[in-house]
Length: 501
Length: 114
Image (cartoon, rainbow over all chains, first blue to last red; front, side):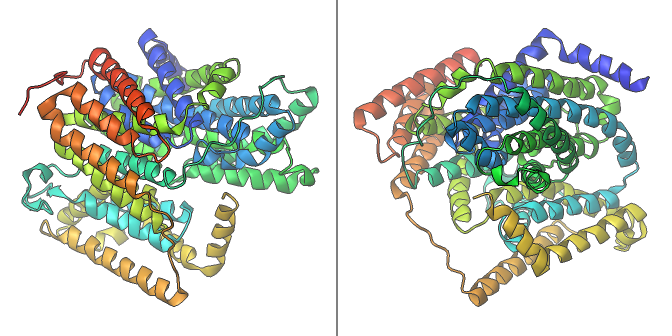
């Protein structure tokens, strides 16, 4: 069996001492930033990216991936114990999880979240292993026109999922694409938007944009209102759920896993959408609907399973098509490229050890996470007592050092300040920074494929409409744009996302 | 299909979307509350980042990190000067240990001067 052989290859790579060690470091850091409100996986991966340049490619990717899914585990701890989502997808977990903690049942809530996440992570990793190779085969048949249509489709889907105004999200994507065109043109070498500065010829550094918008801007927003953190609820006792609890969480975990695995593939925050959908589903089909919001364990197990499953399957578009579904994935594209690997359908055949090693490491990472999160919960609880006045200077200092070390270029550091302020103003205007970052990463890809397709067709623009793959993707894109503009859908989106606040 | 083609296309889209947002905002009477802007944090953190960029190649790792950390720590309105000094010192030590000792970052600890 092919799959079995591949998995053996994967595990023999992932189980190398060095890889297990960095997988552990990754999930440990991921849990830490997931637990701490005010710093998320995007900023962390951006900061650690330069450090991983000296690693073997597979080791680097294993660690970065660990930070991403580790943060999904950590986020639930904060949500349950102090009613603050450490990570955006944990927002629904806070509803029932914190209520359970107030009733003295923090232990079972944490256990339900961890067990659900583990089962979901395991299943979703298998889904990833089974679904990725055939998809990569399909992707190999893509021409430049098809790629252009696919990237455009991905960008538009991501706005349909973003919260807030769709118009603003669309504008953010376009602005991101425009920022991505700064620097020398790929085909002619003509400098664009460089303002006579030689430092801008290479383009704006992606890490500076990510650190500025997700690190600095977020800190400025947090410093608007300095308050003490909400008090911690007493200790955590009785971790193990009762038999009644175990019976009640089985269904939600199974449904959450399925939902999450399916929705995670969508670009732009599939894991957030997955946890909300799962909560809504559990609430609708439960016989104890009135318990929801008052400490129903189903409302913890379902969404937590869903967001963790989605975190794993969101690697599918990255590994098969080279398309990042989340800003963290966009940073991972950077990690691939630095190591001389172009993410996309060729990874699976050119670098089988890397591809399968990464997948196998996710399962190992999930085992490590359960061990980290259940027996060692006390450490994370203590970490919640670190005051923000210490935390934010640490983030800023590490951010500037990390970015500078990337290429020892002081202009990359200045760019952080610029994008921090720009990001803060945008957030204040109700514009999310995530679509901008996706546009920034995918913009050059969009331009390259658009121009390549037109060069091959000798300037004939109908090439996008005559190829079946490209045509169907473009039709879907237009459909989504129309749907997003329809008032009825818009209202429903607002309902889904205001529940979160 | 020159180098300006794609930026022009996207630029036109950005302009159109921006106009649409303005028109929609005017029609709907949308008002954005800026609320309390943390001017002190904004100024100090920006200054800290720019300071780091400008001086890291001139003063070396330890002095630059220490000033950057101190400026950033003072961005909080609730921090006492002594605490700020202690936090900045601790962070500088931690950063030196992690980046220079641990990760072998090639930046001189101090110097080379201007």
